[in-house]
Length: 96
Image 1 (tube, helix red, strand yellow):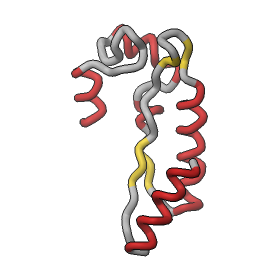
Image 2 (tube, helix red, strand yellow):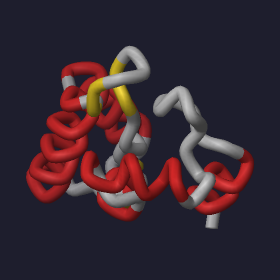
Image 3 (cartoon, helix red, strand yellow):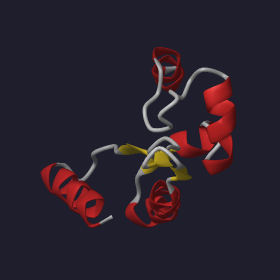
Image 4 (cartoon, helix red, strand yellow):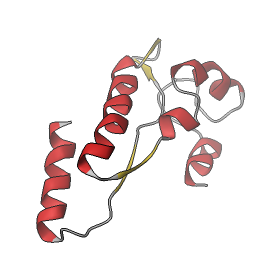
């Protein structure tokens, strides 16, 4: 969060009227076996801080089902078997 806050401060220092859109990270697994709770926590903090810092958020974490969406994402062929990387289909979905 410190790095994200610094980025936002620097952007606003260059242009106070800058429009900022932050995307939460996608759900993934940690070390190929456990849900990545760090990403879940980070996504929530990004969303909570958005109104205070006046930036927009696209919640990719939520859109891809969050932690509970990992198995479905694998089954649907958008999350690779390593549980960390997304497939071409998954990255295309994120882009849409």
